[in-house]
Length: 365
Ligand SMILES: Nc1ncnc2c1ncn2[C@@H]1O[C@H](COP(=O)(O)OP(=O)(O)OP(=O)(O)O)[C@@H](O)[C@H]1O
Image (cartoon, rainbow, N blue to C red; front, side):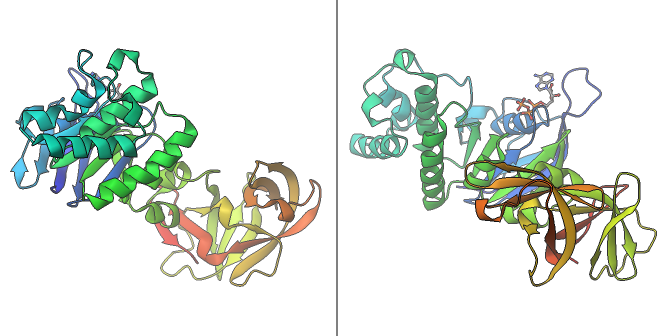
């Protein structure tokens, strides 16, 4: 396997003036699994296709190992791919489709059988090995395509929405197996997905993109606990982070409601911030505790507006001084609508952002 380095890579299509991918730089370590995550149109597929060699790079450099690959054909880049629409060969059985690159490399028969067997067991397609692709469902074809990529030895593995057509249960089972397999074989891998659960479950680091720009490239923990800016803070997490305008006070911050009035204060250290800094204050719903007595937390009074049980947790809508907050609770802790309850906000769960640029200023007070 190899390192994979993107250095200031941009893509402008045809006569567009806009950059669909705008100066993306990232360094993917040997054996590292990363996800390109973002909403439709953010530039993740264009980035993957440039790494694969299906699209020209408008500017910047892509390196696989110590080789600049900008001008190499896809087949010269030593990358294994599972792309949507990267079709299986209909006249070949599933077994031969998966083994295709190994057969081409003259891998010994016993070795081929062993590897095809192992990858098909992992992806639950063992019973399909003697079938032909046209007789398979979309989800089965997708797993065969994934097997065909994963069976190879390649410098890098490029997977485009690799599990989009699978049932949720199978997806959850395979995610864990695929991650274990990629880690055990030290496969340098780039996965494109718009599903943050998948990105977080499968990868070591996640690259969050928006409007062609790389917003943050970090571990799942970084994205949740130390979002680089307001975009990442609101994009990552379900329900999304509570975000309000705020201001610095002598001993912490004050959160403002829609009318610009002080809704509640959170005491803590805001070293280095001037009183005039335009701030946004972010608090993750999972960190807000309905009830008092939490050490290291600011406790304020909130009115319960709504409470929805979602099967394994509830979303609790609260009004605190005219600010609408969402908290996540378990069933036992869910108070009825209309009640006034203590609401604890741990100081280390408070994020401050610069209102003008959106950049994070401070995580935790
Ligand atoms: N072949 C193309 N010609 C012109 N514009 C393109 C082409 N492919 C992509 N684009 C544009 O580039 C931008 C980024 O598209 P891209 O497919 O990379 O985004 P994406 O995040 O992968 O979205 P999706 O999840 O919908 O595939 C979009 O505005 C898209 O319209």
